[in-house]
Image 1 (cartoon, one colour):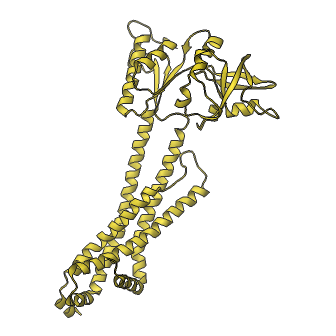
Image 2 (cartoon, one colour; image 1 turned 180 degrees about the vertical axis):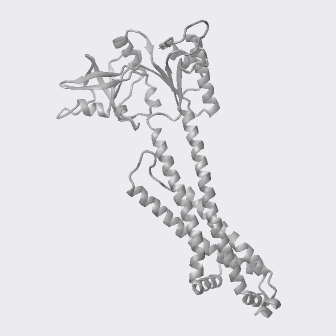
Image 3 (cartoon, rainbow, N blue to C red; image 1 turned 90 degrees about the vertical axis):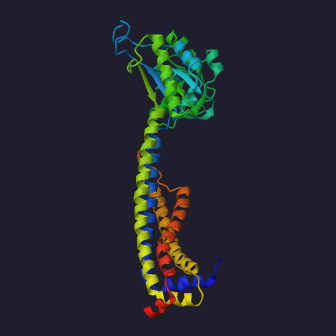
Length: 412
């Protein structure tokens, strides 16, 4: 129940002991401030690292062909493993779990032109699912589709930098125009943006892999197979990779343990490592922050002990007039909660303000971006402040509740 008399009494006590209250609250405010700044800085570091993972699904797997490094069934070391369309189809139909899968060709930089504008851009034939795997954003038009693959269409999806390099002056509309790739005309059906930090990713041109094999290669060889593991767990994703390696090992006759024959980059594993790392960093930050807050709580508790000692006679009079022990406990704990909560919120606001200032004024670096403290942290800090105040006031309050009126009056 809200009692105005108690609040007036708390205000009067705080007003009489301004310096003591300030120093007591400062320790709590400093603890919350340090916690918020550390958590925000940790979030900034995590955001910076996450930025490095852009430009490809975090649940992506890339399988590239290589050369054998181990003898197997009498076959020599150094054999070149060449993937074909059959490998892509086998993984797609045999391995259960992948939600998007694509084969790729590496045709390198090619001379691409539009009218009198020329440039050397990376040609990357693929299947339609690669747009999902690479997490491309379509600015205009569309990505490749299955009809393009089945009908061997001469269509192209170009990056922003390809568009700006080929379409200049008054002729800046790329959609529907025909570009020449090594002398062959391809119709531009889409323009994409790649969020990878590597600017070269914006200089790619994606065309149907079936068309590239027919026009530029003359065979069904591919260089890479990639897929995403969907919502699979770490164990399920690892099982997909193991099955894919076993299937390729059987089809191309190489040792399952030969990592150079087939190079597999599992982005899931990299993401898991960083998640574990940042989980440890967050735990370390919370330990430091809570330790600092505990030091503040001890300070508040000691001050409340002094308050109880100073008000021994007053407490004795209250009890002699009929005040219950729990009313005394409530008064002391309420005062403690008020001091810690008010001071803590000041620390919370200052911490958030510092993070906002740093976020706006400090330029984003490669591994540090947008330090921030989210709403959940504010909620946790609020709960922590109330609990801290209650703990800080509990033991002094219990001591006050045990004061005997006769001894309290004699103590004066």
